[in-house]
Amino acid sequence: MNTIAQDLTGRVAVITGASSGMGRATALLLASRGARVALLARRKDALEQLAADIRAQGGTALAIPTDVTDPASVEAAAAAVLAEFGNADLVFNNAGLMLPGAIGAQPQREWETQIDLNVTGAMRVIQAFVPQLEAAAAQGKVVDLINTSSIASQYVYGYFAVYSATKAFVSHLTRHLRLELGPKNIRVSVIEPGITETELQGHFTFQGAIDWLANAAQSIEFLKAEDIAATVGFIVSMPKHVNMQQIVIMPTREGI
Ligand code: NDP
Image 1 (cartoon, rainbow, N blue to C red):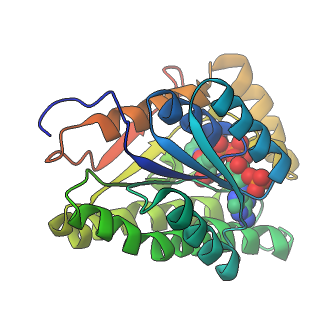
Image 2: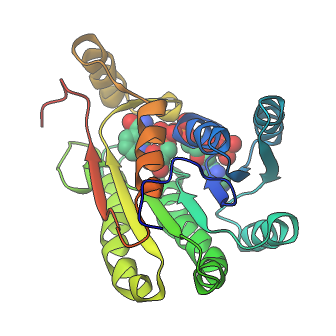
């Protein structure tokens, strides 16, 4: 395929973090363009509602309640995708959590959870689905693995040390994966968004970050989840020989 492929009919997309924000918006976009979408996150009700919405619009969706920090849960999700849709050929590895906090004072659970989810969880998804991506590539399909990192992977923000480091892992991992998987015809990309209006910031407990966010919202029009979905849509529409390795996407008024 050497042209821009707006029509995604025939593709099998797995989206983690599909119950809200960027994952949800991306699932809606990919399904509207013909991909069959597997929706992974923990909240069953939200996934089932999204799947129903997609079906009502003529799309094909499967809700698979999954905790990506649980190896058995991720393996079961991979098996369910294979059984229902065949091999995944598009994985949007997107589930994540951001909990700013002061080093030495942040509750242990908060920094641990970010590492468990953003690093280990992301790796579990990759390990579980790469065999399917390899099988799809071997069949000659266009194949994408897209990881969600953050602008925080590149810049230094006060009290975001652990979160930023988890996203630096994701960005650097992506470079290595592209080297390893590219020769197998698997495209590997990372998206590094700036601040985006989703549920992510609703989990903050650190007052300094809550205040910073309120202040930022006064001066910046945040990105929308749909802006990230459009970016995923752009990446997967590229001709088969084109790998968009890294996309940084920022609100126009977010200065860094
Ligand atoms: P949301 O909070 O809206 O979405 C996060 C998603 O991750 C939810 O669907 C949540 O679903 C899922 N999730 C959380 N924990 C788990 C788990 N253990 N297993 C499976 N799924 C889980 O935020 P965003 O859409 O903003 O976040 C998407 C990605 O974007 C994250 O990786 C985030 O770090 C990154 N990002 C966000 C930015 C922003 O400003 N919003 C900026 C840059 C990057 P559930 O609770 O149902 O499990």
